[in-house]
Image (cartoon, rainbow, N blue to C red; front, side, top):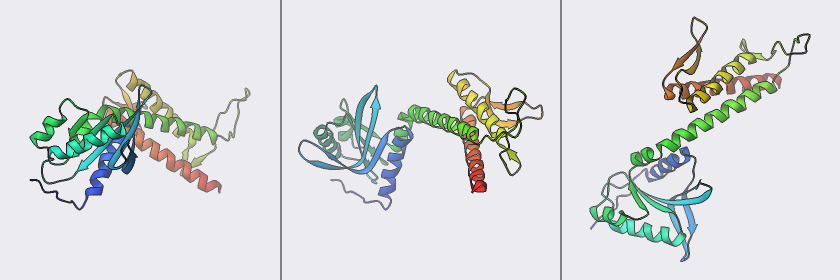
Length: 239
């Protein structure tokens, strides 16, 4: 006989689970209601995503208990998954699972996991999604800087030679150059080349580099935040 312990932070457990799927590029709705053949079902997290162009859906049950999850809970989720036509059901437990639950889930479309298991399972998708998001941010900011362009000087050929927009002594051209360098860094990352830029100059005048993808992405995030603040300051000064 098992006894459920109602945790104080059960909602946070659901939210944290949803965030893992959101980080992997999925849609994730907490406390969702889904329609099935036999009726409507309230589920902890309803996850949807596309795989090879096909719409997929997973039903996630979050069990923040202080005891192992019994097979009855796995059977209940299996019934809901079948009724709504979901592709997979996942029981996320912070404790573990009884042996009967493990046997029932084996060779089925029910996955038993902890939060750490899910992070590891979706780790590659999370990393890929983060890289794509940051590269999109860099591209967006590059064009936002170009949209600020107010040339003060032109060459005889009509080419722009100077950006007049600046804030706190920093010229827009500086941000544009750094964003372009980071954009090339994403190309290196995709080609698995070494020497990823980290966004600051050495005494030699060359851009500092790293072999660490983590350090490169951290540098990109810092530049994205810095550039966003610069654009906000410029916008405020204009109004």
